[in-house]
Image (cartoon, rainbow, N blue to C red; front, top):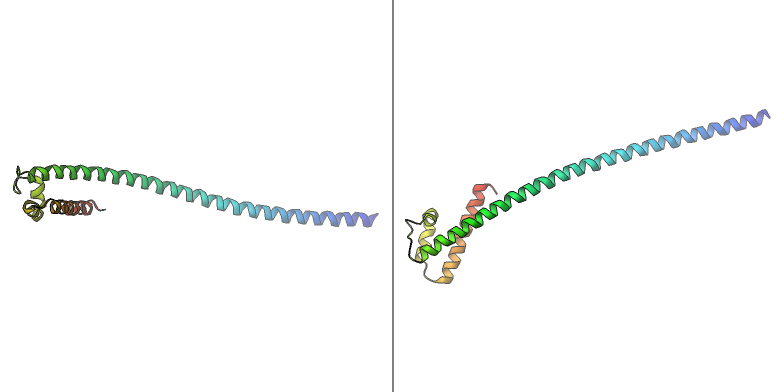
Length: 135
């Protein structure tokens, strides 16, 4: 009978060691999971901040595009007035701002060439606007 109790005690001690080992493994696994979870949460926060910054930048760029489109429309009006002979390079604000480009537009006589030069002039002005805005 004493041997049965010793055997039972040894069995219970083994179960206790196994339970402690399983508990330690579970705690280690839980800590690893929490670390991964915290990393994911941090990553999501950074991603959300990046998204908000990108949205703000997109709004700013859209505003800039709208402003530049308005300027291009104004330039079209000035160019049309100028091409109709109601303006000259010295009085048109657009053409005086363009400097040497205004002479090219003023001397332009073939419509297809005018369109090409007008497009080139707009590209020139837009690129300088982008440089001035830092984009």
